[in-house]
Length: 68
Length: 254
Image (tube, rainbow over all chains, first blue to last red):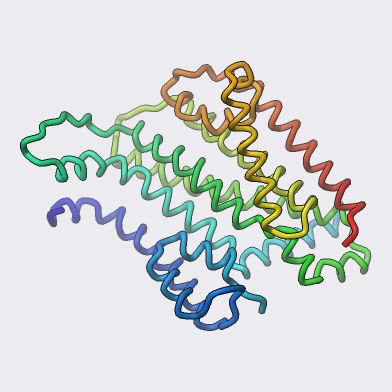
């Protein structure tokens, strides 16, 4: 995709990327600060929430998050 | 009544602390932005992928394509994410024992169920409103002048289906002890609805019509009046399921 099209869609891409990154970072911070998971380990969850957009974070908070 | 508001506040606080509210809002916001964008970009992406030797005329994207994306995403991914997030609605607190303390202190079980249901419906309403608002705003910006009919009614149907799904979820949560059981029962209920939908005669009475007929409404190929029956049935079933959940939870051995 050339630069002109990219510029045209910037008003969409910025909030979209911001939302995804915000979700990913929140999940990543949680993964790193709470080292107890229902299953899996720290490296696995960190990779999942960083590289699987949206779904990774949802799965982590729904299933992977351990007891406080 | 006072117990109810206090417990409702506690529920909302819990959703913010467990990031459930954040996830719901973020997922639906991402969908809301992606819908019109995908509709606009899909012809261009397809066009750039095709080799020069193949000629294929791609129709110009319209506002209708954006709403196709909206109803596709919200009825599939949106509802799935919601179900997964809310599947631990009762099992989490029961397994940790925090709910039992409050119940022995005199909190009525009816209040627990009702405020949990209210809170789920509130979160769902906010999320779908956010998604609808973003899609609407960007669609108007990207496809100015394109008009669509029955949009609000169609979205209302989708919202009502979500409310019905939450009632099923709550009922399933009172029946089982784990959140996987809850997910299983809810999933089974939806699959049964879909299977029943194969018989054309049942289509007019099936609540799942509310989530499958949205596009037909927007293109005006489905009469608005044909959905009055599913709407009524969904409302009655939701009410029935919530009352049943209250009755079961009151009798349940914790």
